[in-house]
Image (cartoon, rainbow, N blue to C red; front, side, top):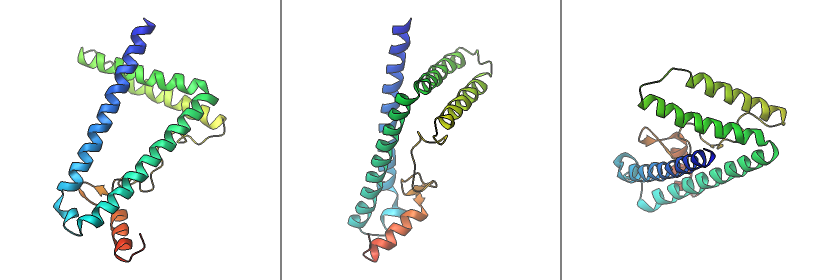
Length: 165
């Protein structure tokens, strides 16, 4: 049974990675196909700004992964809770597909998240310590909000025009 659960977790991780890749590809396609953004400045300027966002996101994701590894090493119970969240999510999907949703999923997840936050705080960490820390919460460091330039993108664009980027 344990091997089956481990296999399910591996499959879920692969699916998550594939979804992240697809999402990243979608964002790139959206960025380049959006005439409102691309036409307002040269391709070189646009590429420079988008490279900055890509580098920033890559750095933020790497730092978050390092923080997660640190927490898993220092507070192993949190890894167990994260694994429980993943397995509960899979079980919830299975129940929903079978038409057996009892509505307890949200309560269970909230309970697990509360325990996780409590353990982080007891360990001297902020509840969001393991999360990605975006410099712009509006666009999540993509430069776009609903297909339009975010205020941070406009700031970068202006700094680029002034030669400060």
